[in-house]
Image (cartoon, rainbow, N blue to C red; front, side, top):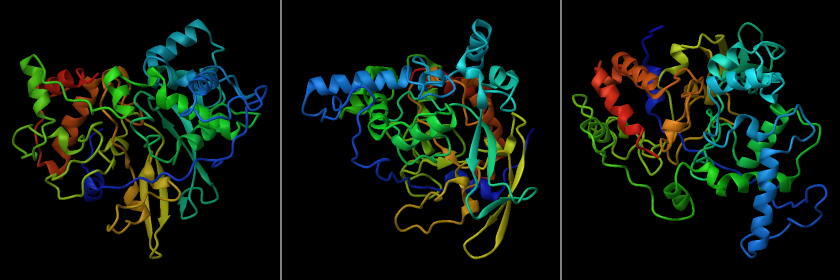
Length: 405
């Protein structure tokens, strides 16, 4: 379904919102995992043996530990190869073993039965609490909402992308891991502060979480990765889309760089033609508005700080439900909560060829689908002036993205 994006959606595309990362859950508290009293309560920077022991335990916690829950581990949804899973992988796992822990709880169509959604779209049910100033128009007493979302890849995240989750709702790795263990794995044993630290350390350091050796070196303080030049004409034309140059609305040069700049290609560019501060990492390109997945649509009533009420109708409002809401950069007034409707993080692009599906709702199954979506967005977005992103342009973009290893 095609829709015209209004002014609010266009502003959402461009506005820069800065993230903040409070102290880890548990602070400096160190509690050893069961059966290993004191053995991992050490400083890995001072001892190779300590670092190796902590990494080994972090791997076990990620790959094996179920915390007494429904059978899921972190690896259930975050595979070694892609950091996520595809519909094809879900279907293969279902055929191989219908008792696979992927097919329980929020992996089921209605939370109780059915595997159609997860095998066709690889989405799971995410229950998000509603902030105090947001209610559902048709059920004001309800204090949470269920949304269908894909599983964010762990490739190059979190070591190189501390914006966690598609809606950026988690402030740090420890809290993200805790909420995943509670929400997805339905634990009966609480993870300790140390265990949450170890899961985070493992994701920041193990080679499986990097798309290439160069990205791992960059995470360790080395030089940033350099964009490949491309060898074919198509690849070189795609490379030009990421040039640090203003998008002129006539050619494709610099077009992708506008929102995909910086070492990880996940930030608004400095000097972008829209005049917004550089570095922002949340945007809307109309994925929720188009709702190609046909997800249930809600009307949220948002009570703004000035006492007014704004109605937002969408299948997934993204960062709008973050509590507290995202803050603005220094010197920029924080917009009303409704401004954040349909904003999601700008994803890093390194390794993107291996991390399908794409967008928060997995509505793009391939990079070719992503390119087609952008063609619709450019056509319909007033800020793009009806720019025509041709089939050749789409092929060029895809050809270059496949080089980003």
